[in-house]
Amino acid sequence: MHVETKLVQAGVGRDGTTGAVSFPVYYATAYRHPSLGQSTGYDYARTANPTRTVVEEAIAEAESGDAGFACASGMAAIHTVMGLFSKGDHLIVSLDLYGGTYRLFEQVLTRYGLQFSYVDLRDLRALEDAVRPETKAVFIETPTNPLMQITDIRAVSVIAKKYGLLTLVDNTFMTPYCQRPLELGADLVLHSATKYLGGHNDVLAGLIVTKGAELSEKVRFLHNSIGAVLGPQDSWLLLRGMKTLALRMERHQSNALAIAEKLREHPAVAEVFYPGLTDHPGYEIQSGQASGYSGMVSFRVRSAAQVAPFLEHLRIVSFAESLGGVESLCTYPATQTHADIPQEIREYVGVCDRLLRLSVGIEHPEDLIADISQALDATLSLIAGECTR
Ligand SMILES: *Cc1c(COP(=O)(O)O)cnc(C)c1O
Image (cartoon, rainbow, N blue to C red):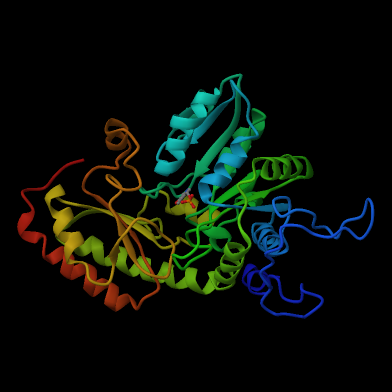
């Protein structure tokens, strides 16, 4: 079956007693045992819940993995996975990283004795140079957020295997509709399902997918032991969202490409970052490892003075901090998603105060282009002279 079909059919025919096509929400936290030593498969809701099971199986199938785990948020999923590591262990992490992940690593997990090195994973030499005796894993975000840099998942997985490291991929931006890291050699995939998988800006959720029996059992133990699991109503909302993922991603992507091309022509814009543009430096790798380019577009205006008026003039696109929903949103990484990354590091990786990030929704492309163009036009008088990076 194709991923579209797997996602649409998730949970259909699974409720044997009623035949409900939309799988029901099970609120029960406790389950009667048939007799001593027997179980229906459900005992206590932290360990397993029937509605959650359907979502977990759906994401495992969609990602070509062996087991799926639904968590209370993307951060809960990442924190759960970090339970695989112990004091003194070292991880190599994408340099241009989601701000919340950076905050969890630097402000929480370093206190537990984990160590993190941030490396531009487009540079495979730099990756090998960063490996230490205590290195246990490589954590990849590709495309990176917000600069849309592309990491070669196959190549990183080969190097990771050579040194006995796990390859962990945050696949939030691409989703299994466009990219399946486990098929490319990764061991574990993470999602903020709050974004494209949920898709409607109405559910906070995280997902983990593992490959291999041993790793799956380890994560199963952590998921139950830590307990940052997804509740039944949220599991149902996520499942409903996942059913339309394929259709949504196609529209997100065609809209994003149209907008990226328009932005490039606009005199108020200095640079555009979208991996679906054929001259994007990661285009070849992206095309070789993914079947699409997703709906995230970043761009730099020419002067930081343009940012506030641009955001104020937007009518359809909302100035808001998230991504992946049907509604178009615009984020200002410097003060929103990446505010917890120190300014020197932000500027070094290129998340400067002229960078804006669009999560392109599924509205009509002409309406989005008209909205963004008029907001950019309103900033033209403010360009003080061309800025350099
Ligand atoms: C949003 C996001 C997260 C965190 O997920 P939450 O659901 O907000 O906890 C992690 N990684 C990426 C790439 C994200 O965009």
